[in-house]
Image 1 (cartoon, rainbow, N blue to C red):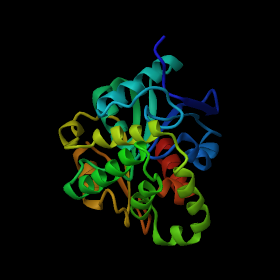
Image 2: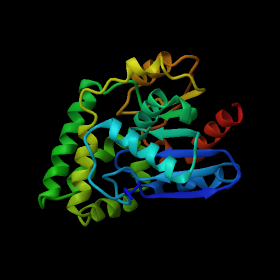
Image 3: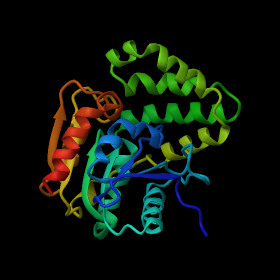
Length: 263
């Protein structure tokens, strides 16, 4: 039997299923503050993408390969249709999932993501990919975090959590080479990515949730994503960062729960 993504199913077993899809350097554990409350009403599925810590196998440098992995996971769990919510890279996967497999997606929530990978984001991504490949070859994995954290978190969060994030940075040096190769492959799947042609094919209720201070996917890209999807709902969290699901999980849960309850 072909291996499936590492995953966790929690929450209300009789509730509608919601799948939460990670950003490129997340693990499913990062969703816990949001998932635990969401699980009072919904059956919550979390997974790591291939190339992340808890999933087996090598990551392919193609977005559609990650979409296929999510479909295979849903098949293995016997879930025909699901509410799909993803942040950053996971948001891109969720958008493509809704476009390619509309029969499997009840609703779509794309959080701190956008319609395409612009030149600036790709330049920054190449630097992270090079640092990840160097770490896989015995280099200092902390350099990957040094590139990613200032773009991911707000200055206030970085200052308030300096000790915790410093420990996280040091732990990065202990991660296996395979994890860094997986991150590099995930980043490679972003090259030249433009989901704009897909957007008109998305017919399910859609929420695009953006933040004012996202330094990866600017508001213009999030707005383009919402504008391209028929009848999409667009919300902006004032002052939020790219890592809104980690910095303000309660706010994301409130907005997501309101959206799901409206369907």
